[in-house]
Length: 144
Image (cartoon, rainbow, N blue to C red; front, side, top):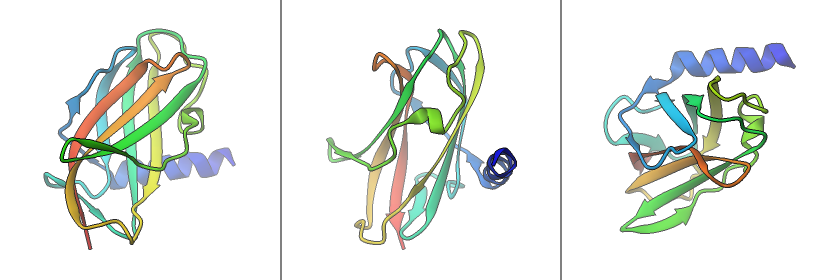
């Protein structure tokens, strides 16, 4: 199982592209880099019916015992929840020591029924107290 996880991370790392992002309140962590597959240009092109991989490399500014993932699409100022599994410890090693370098990786499916639209995606990884470890926004276009 561990070898499968390592292989998956390597495949994601090879196929992902560093993106330009805006930090939206990373309080408990410091983002080093963010890689998103299918994001060679701005806005990132999320094709319906495909998987998008997101890898966040960050430094934890304090110890973390548990974490959750929260993702929203922001359309005309309205935050719409994006369904992702909430247990971020399945996407990175927990617990996390203060000062540790962390690699968080997640894969999300862009449903074929999603409308073709331009929006902003806000991605948060929160600690056990609900404080943002990392928070970033990127422009996205959902397309065929």
